[in-house]
Length: 347
Image 1 (cartoon, rainbow, N blue to C red):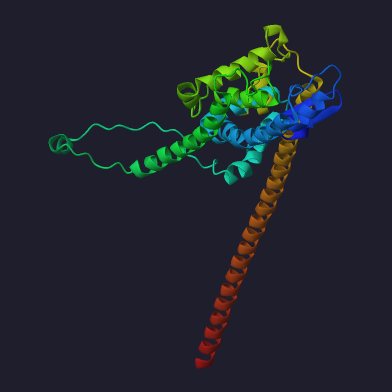
Image 2: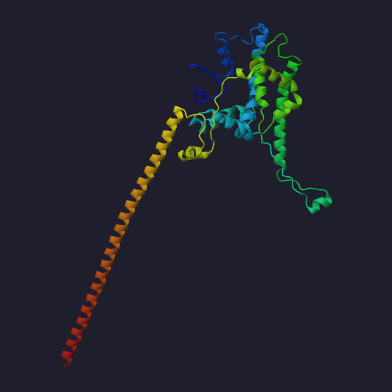
């Protein structure tokens, strides 16, 4: 079971069972043997508050994470898409990332977070002589668009601040959100996971700068939860590193010949896809050869037919000329006979 079957993130596969969505994953994991719920020490009221706050985090912070990773083109092409391509098998890596991005579009459109402009570098031009004398500069044609871009990004940052202020006040100086808890609750885990995603070193650091400058306590809390979950490097889940190419040349089998061999042998699925790809290109080349052969035969037949038509037309022209000459000769003979008759009568 993989992402192309589930169709959304996050998802968890355990044996033959698959769950998607944070709450569904949490409920499934809590039912496993030897697993203690992170909310085991909380009272009924605190659990109810946790459920409400987790839903708020998934909705509001989830929109910001989706906007940062899937909407901003610099982050999508520079980080998110490359990461998905490196984890997906062929041929799903060629179409599934874009399909996953489009699945977030309705959600972000409803939250008014899809059409936010990208960060742009301002093109500073040297002032002209008139501008140096008067001290005035002409208004840039794109200044209105840049103003709208800055305003839209500031509006997103204000929205993020309103959300983060709530949880910054809730956390205060405590290690976790619940003062009597010595370990992170489900709210701590889910909130910290969103903060970890928002402070990734991306090409467009829209929220990273905001978190670093205004919310250092939330970053400390996220790092504390992360170190509690993974105290040592050995506690991380094993990940298979795979070197892949996102170039369009990777679609063609000939490009594999010039690529360096990696330490990971191809999987059976990749071998099957490679054979299918070679078969497709072989069939395409064969069909093209047959097409050209058929076109050649058709051209030969057409040329032969046209040459026969030319020969027939030339013969018919010669016949017409001979018939015209015969008619002329007969006409001349008739004129001579008429002249002889007229001379005889005169005598």
